[in-house]
Image 1 (tube, rainbow, N blue to C red):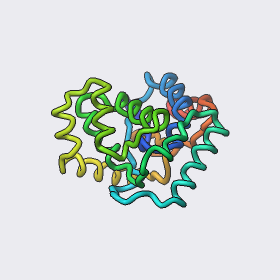
Image 2 (cartoon, rainbow, N blue to C red; image 1 turned 90 degrees about the vertical axis):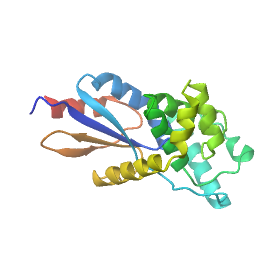
Image 3 (tube, rainbow, N blue to C red; image 1 turned 90 degrees about the horizontal axis):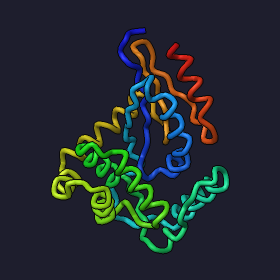
Image 4 (cartoon, rainbow, N blue to C red; image 1 turned 180 degrees about the vertical axis):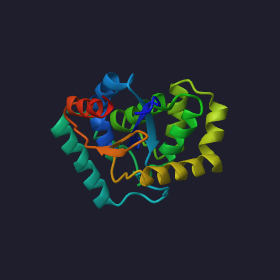
Length: 206
């Protein structure tokens, strides 16, 4: 294998409930392999822009996913979200917020802020006002963040990233793809433990 470091792509959406459920295991995976590979976060864009309220049937369905993940993994959710907000099937605003934060070196801090606002504080990250609040909470340059959040360039960058995620084979969220000079393979997601993913990755490296 070339001396060039292998890449592990983590394809996600900041408003993907399964990504939230996977977070504790993903943190362990990262800790175990961060010296061995380059970890690259890739936005997959779960749901495009929409001003329409989410249909009640879809709200019920997604709320049931939260309950399922909570029961399966012990993940915390604030189910008051569904009563306190007018949900929209729209994750692109939060994805653009991630890109605007990435431009200031704060992608992971923004991801943490969005997930905390959404899943624990019952706030709606489909709304730019909530995203501005998240940016303020993590200490970003607000003038620059707001400009980047709303810019056509950031939206185009998101579309390009979504296209890239599809080009490497992304079919769901979260997804893991391991890339060397010689191969690009998808790793299965184990939501309950990290050891298998770490062992699989290390078997490909050594």
